[in-house]
Image 1 (cartoon, helix red, strand yellow):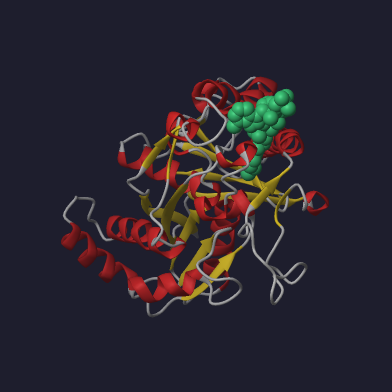
Image 2 (cartoon, rainbow, N blue to C red):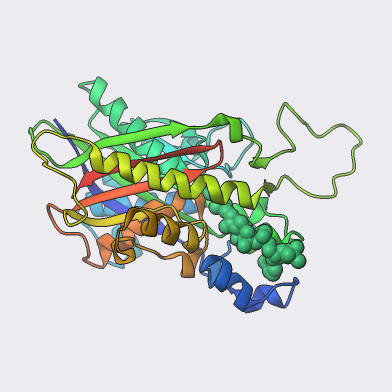
Length: 349
Ligand code: COA
């Protein structure tokens, strides 16, 4: 049995906000943001756009590709996506910025909008590691049930609505976006597709990256004057240190993993590493520690900033659609984020 990726898609809001645009509103500068994070821009959704809207666009692009259509005609894309949606058995949507609090899941909203009438649908909360967790969860759900064949895995975020725009230490870091993949279970015994996932958590760091208000721990109370919405609070230094260790440990472990028929996972054997991108300096520090050339890492943080669970699937789709993924390529993903969570996937294209 193999779990193959047969379609990828992404959706990013058209509105691009540069560091200079932010510097006109808050006390920051292009120079500070670039030198401390590698971020140049972020894409920000309009007020009317919610998590499921971006997720649906990314999903339709991935579904259309799975159905054989990769062109730019919106009607043809929708037609191909609609047909492919009927064959989806599982929808897993990773997000920290769901349409609704608690229920319904954003995955159910997406299921309805794309017409995946035969699919189960659920969200998972694993911060920026959400897509890495989601891929393994979907793969497990396909593997255990002979009647399930195809899954849609999405990472989608509207972080701009959960950002405290008065906090320059966090608001410059985040952006909006969504990425999606379609995975298919084949009965061939091939060493390809999703081969292995490492999933880890360190819940002792749960307060380092937190949306403190609104949950059952700290609900808004009747009559309370709400001066800030639910927003991300972060201990930047703590998360930075955790992230460098998480990337380093995850990649080291993945590279030592023995998979029958695959041989050693040497640096030369790896075609690309797709890291979660919260700060380019985190990736650079991990690359240096592991003595992996930085060119192996696919970085697009300059354009999108940190899009949390969407970062890795957006990067996968960019590589795929620009012809940079070849059959047989070995790809490692590596993520870290709120929870705290971390992990990675080994994929052969
Ligand atoms: N513009 C200008 N100055 C800023 C700023 C901004 N946007 N944000 C912070 N500063 C200032 C601080 O106020 C501080 O000034 P001070 O020395 O006068 O007090 C100074 O820059 C240094 O702040 P510091 O927090 O030490 O910066 P840093 O080099 O540690 O970088 C982060 C801060 C947030 C970029 C970094 O800690 C980080 O990337 N952390 C991990 C984030 C992450 O991974 N989050 C998501 C996980 S999925």
